[in-house]
Length: 273
Image (cartoon, rainbow, N blue to C red):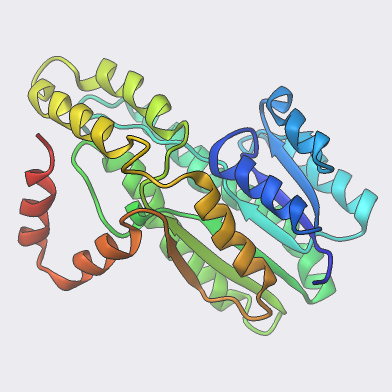
């Protein structure tokens, strides 16, 4: 397999870290980026490289991409993984918090893509892999802002794929299901601060309990499952436009496509208890 130069954002934990380590084992030249460079020591020890990059900073994105181009002359694969989730009732979530969610999950991703694209187009080769979620196709209560970023990413990626037709640059969407990462830990604390008391307290408590059940190690896939799917897409000369992977991803996406809004609402709420 041809050695590729790969940039992975959000590589300090979870799916990003597992993906960086998997692709290093596959024989690629991997650059992991994150705000917490101290959390990427294992990537460096495995033979990869670690760069600090906050996807919300124009300066840090430009510096990191230029660093890679100067060292390698190209970036073959961009894996846009950096992101997080905020949960809480729409009424309880400040617009500043909602704006930050979009700044990281969508605009940050777009910022990195814009920095990398000219180099890929110049080489008439490259693949952009965007880590979405089954949450870009389905929805859950108190997750309006997180789900909206992933729904937006799905459409954004589809439009980008059309724009890049004929350039040699491909666009792939990864839709993970329930994955045991820092996602739950980052989500639950602030979520309960927002909606754990007040008008939505009962619903919040139910969602907390169901989330803890769902993200139990026995019920959720490890991030290595997603990393293996990304590795498959990287190896393919003509990857699929979408890969649903991990616990429940294919099942839930198919079920959402199959049934009406009202029926899906009822099934979702039956699990929040």
